[in-house]
Image (tube, rainbow, N blue to C red):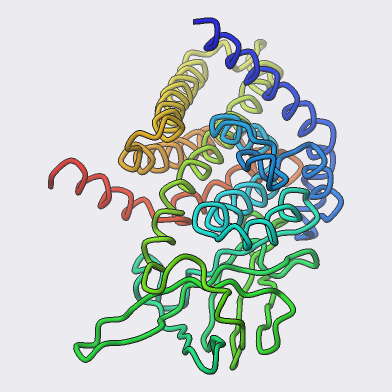
Length: 384
């Protein structure tokens, strides 16, 4: 019992610390960064200084060596204020650092992880392609082993953190062979940012997460050493999908944080806005909306934390991760929509945070596995 109380106290302190940081450093400029669609190097560095990169990475590789629930709470609290900065943290930790930590050699871990745990370097997760979204095995990017080097050709799209000025590289899934029956072998390869034949392009005109970095990757006879293979040849799809299993927890945390932020904004507005001589929160139609929002958020948090604790205790968590990702993203959608409704016309104006929450939540039902794919995953686990 004493250990549980100690951990609970640690988590409460972490939540308070990250919340204060988000309120002080991110909230005052979130709207401006969103409007300019500007990725902030300064905020990224400050988040690194706070220890938000490499949260769960062992100290020997430069990380904070905290538990996974600490990481999820940190993402939740940043998302409560701004989805863009939460996306930077979630993608870098789960998709950038995660595969290197879980499948990298000792040499690869020591080479890449220390810089990636500081906020001075970011890393991309090169999976999605124009014809490989929900079908992750639709990858067409290919890599051929020639004279001790991988020759990579192809492209990737919608890759977070992959084209900023501090991006150090990306982990890329590529087809490394095709057998006589046409069955593809997938492998993952480390591609550093300044590699010849590798170029990146930042994507603009996004509806959501406008202050995060989203990229297209191009490989044109991109040559990297054979030793840049991550894991074993043929394990690429397994590595990417196992990474996504854990990544779903962080996307769920983003949904939970978004819902919490939208709810708090709606509650504050409802207590201040008066109609017919009293605050609109006193009208049953509004108070019931807020009650339902609070209920959904509480259920979402319980489900996400349960899934996280299963993962943390090395128990099967994949079904619960899919459930958490699905439910938290759907709750974010419902709560953000009701928050705009409570604000009325003001909810459609950019100076009100709920307008940004309403846009930011939309990707949560698409990224790292659509809601439809989560239902497919869940259905398989329950025996359908």
